[in-house]
Length: 153
Length: 153
DNA sequence: CGGGATATATAGCCTGTGCTATGAAATCGC
DNA sequence: GCGATTTCATAGCACAGGCTATATATCCCG
Ligand SMILES: [Mn+2]
Ligand SMILES: [Mn+2]
Ligand SMILES: [Mn+2]
Ligand SMILES: [Mn+2]
Image 1 (spheres, each protein chain N blue to C red):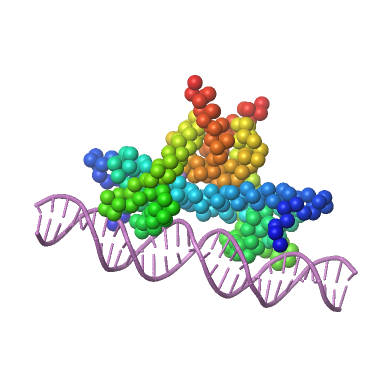
Image 2 (image 1 turned 180 degrees about the vertical axis):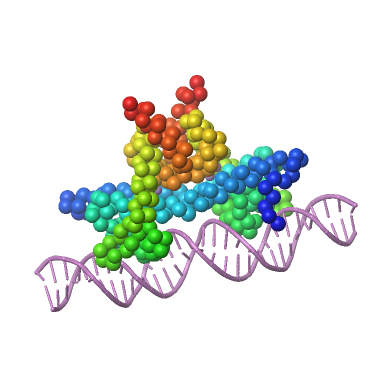
């Protein structure tokens, strides 16, 4: 009962297409699950570097959600090894967390910069980038960066 | 206790930035909620036009999810007025559903075509477009379309 | 025109991500 | 150093979107 990777040899050639189609949706669903973590870690890094500390209440304010929502997510991020919480002192990134944050910040910057290079207004570029960034593969990111580079020259 | 839109006049100017930041995340969260509906409606339209009918089992196969998952979502789409179910005959789009499907198909096509115009490989363009499409605003979509047009000339 | 194959429906479970209400703990200004 | 303020934790709710197992309904072919 293993999933038949290649069945229906010729009569129904749409089977292969369907498999590939499904694969794409699977990956997108996966990306959706990691989006939130990425936004949190990226925001925490930004708060630490710009405000000196990252507090639950401030994270909640920036994300536009309630504090208990943040509390639960931070617990998960700590369990997953991305952050360390020091009660009443703020949230700190682990090595792993810092690495992820750096990657996300870089990607976010490239995507947003790319949109602006295309002539998109700042406001819209910021918003679209916030959602798009999580679905941009390495290959596409590279193309975006190259486009910005050649356009800026 | 209404949310203070503009408080802390000068000492903490970061307040405005935080508000705007939160707004962006709010919109992105909203987009996330409509993503699935869009994918369903778009897929249903595609199945109807290419296979002649859209069945639960086929939708499930294409999306890579279980049939009961599709069943529940279809019920919701019917409640929301996007589709009409004729048991054992397939799923059909309402006027509203057709309009949404057309919009999504057009947007999907433009985004994917844009990525390919940028030099992204077909496989990756298809996958990235599947996720990105839901976060592309009208302004950005227009820019994408124009880019493709000028590149194709 | 029956009966196996196929399609759909339903029940019940889990996880994730929102929320409010509320309790407890720490900080900090006085 | 004490009390108000701030910060954090927890309980409990809702809903979306996955899943499996299983019941039921329809189709269609021999
Ligand atoms: Mn984001
Ligand atoms: Mn980001
Ligand atoms: Mn999609
Ligand atoms: Mn699509």
